[in-house]
Image 1 (cartoon, helix red, strand yellow):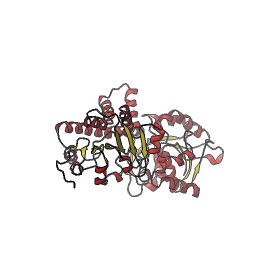
Image 2 (cartoon, one colour):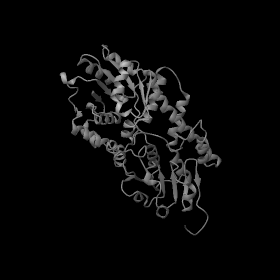
Image 3 (cartoon, rainbow, N blue to C red):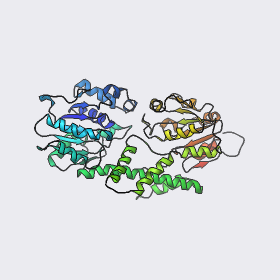
Image 4 (cartoon, helix red, strand yellow):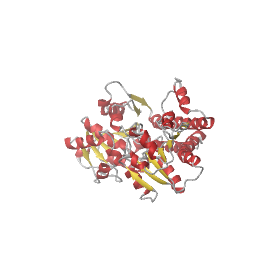
Length: 439
């Protein structure tokens, strides 16, 4: 099929790569705010396994063509079957004009696939801009997972399709047929239902995380290891283990943005959600929890201290720091005159772009132990896999005050304490044994 994709989001890049890979004739129009040269250099795209290689492969084979600034092509060869929109929420106002412009350049049928996270009802409004004549708009919910975008598109657990027209459904099924062979993963529902389902799912996941963080705080106050509580809850078949890990707050360009979009939907129709407000408040508070633990340990005497941080990205496998907990932590530490030595294997360029050359910040992207030199404490913020099993003797001998703050509960408290370190996690703690001999 002939497909035209608009947008510079991860969803747009992934769709362009995957659809051209299986033989569709794809024309990709990146948004003017980030054209192809900028996308090629973007850390978040380069960090995605296989994705950049597949894009370059499509360009070489000719199944993928790029438009960089010339807009939509004119002439007979511009006729397309599918207009695929994967725009950011901030580009919503452009979507209607874009749909009308593309629809106006050709006669006959056209299916608009709205792969953007827009307000509920936006797909219906986009269909109006297509001008009738059998042209339809469907909502294909963005299910891309950052860090595994290629796999989540080409081997999906499900596609959530909002569609009210049999012919449009058949067109979308044909577009995605190569990724829907083993079993039918297409879940069909009305357009508004699909749009709301995406937002409601994000809200539910955020609620589970925030609730578990509340329980972790309670466990801390009662002297209970929250890991026992987590495993006990997860073993209940009505609950399960997914998104039941306490931590120092969630972030990310999509998760946080979609949660705010759900809040906007509530406000737009005059509803007040006390639950959603609490979820958002709890998450922001949790971004400060590691600072509060550090403050408590040193009895508020933080000025002049040096702290090492492992991890800045909002999640492992990403180079992004959008709404990441590390930003809140850094602001709190700097306000107290704390020097920070931060290591992250991917996100240091994004952090430098966000905060500049701060006098109290030194960045490392090579040896993580270099960030611990002359540091009083180590704070783990992002659970990159190579942080999971550190050289404990080296770490214990390097940290001056022997304090480890685990913002993701990836370490075993007793094991850490056995190496002479004070361990503080989220709802977990351990003290080093009283003994003079070392392990």
